[in-house]
Length: 89
Ligand SMILES: [Zn+2]
Image 1 (cartoon, rainbow, N blue to C red):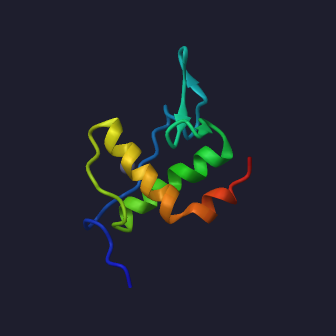
Image 2 (tube, rainbow, N blue to C red):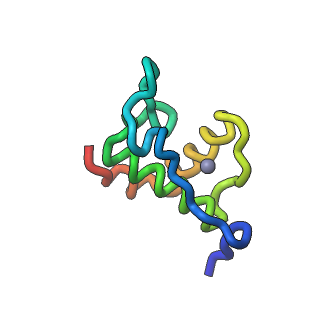
């Protein structure tokens, strides 16, 4: 059985980000390094997968740079390739 990430984690969804919105001001929000348009079902599924990846200890915690988020997203793209391919478009 996989060991979880750091104890007492919670998942937070930014209500002003790509889970709910396709853009903020004049900026289009894209998820998974531009793969999914924000506010769409595949974007929401990918965001939840990413957050569960942290809770499960699969992804590197404490991202402070977009490059670190991108690296984690790339890990998901590799480890969850078939699941991500099954997301509705
Ligand atoms: Zn993350």
